[in-house]
Length: 333
Image 1: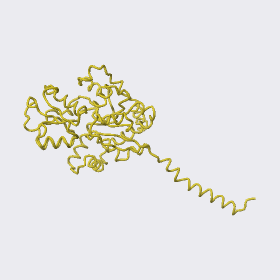
Image 2 (image 1 turned 180 degrees about the horizontal axis):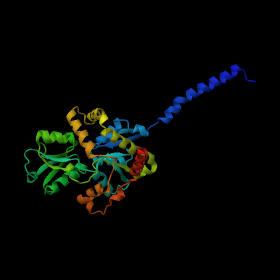
Image 3 (image 1 turned 90 degrees about the vertical axis):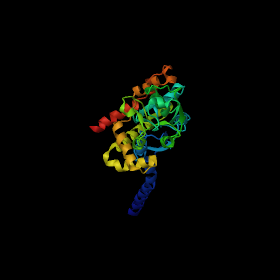
């Protein structure tokens, strides 16, 4: 027969053992999947940064480590080498790599399917013909700015192969410095540098944001092998990105978003940061959609890709976006 003392002792032991186990159980429940995500510095990619800083990925079980990579080609190589699992990347870089044999690459989303660049020149350039023989700064040969610069030259009636010189000058800040110093004659910029260009009186020969040309400025790129291995990780990334985009556009989060953008750009210029938030809240509504048309536009406008018989649907996996749409519909009811 158990005495009251024995019974009490056993109960106490059970309670103590439960409390001892609780920390480990709690730790197991909050373990996050580490995810390395390369990204370029650009206005639309700021959605990704805000999602990261707002904790949107953690809510879906991911500990994202953003890695700034200056050139798109370098970032794709990192992805293909397995040193990163998902990346934010301009459409042309991923498509070019795919066309050169990297068939494991796949687009699953984007934080914008409309070009948000302006083509800006130094004040001495008065008309398109003045660009002949001049130097145009892009981030890196083969990167999205390379493609967009060539597209701009074509729209201005110039031949990008012989009428101008394209040089890799780095990120937007480096290109802006080079243009201001007179080291180059033209370049491409997204907000907030669009505001700086207007205030400095630099001529804007083309404003792509006012056209209907579809292009994945900052696509979500991964590999089919990673999707096979961890489909739920990819889905959780898309959920976190979508939540972060909602956070970005929500007016009640304005002060936080501007603070996060200041970290992203390493700037405390409030007006420029407000310009960025305002523009992208309008340019990129809804979910992180990627479209076949945005992929096709790259293919048909790139001389090295147009003759390869590439098909946009071969590079897309829209299953994650479809599932995201379904989840949002259920949540809305």
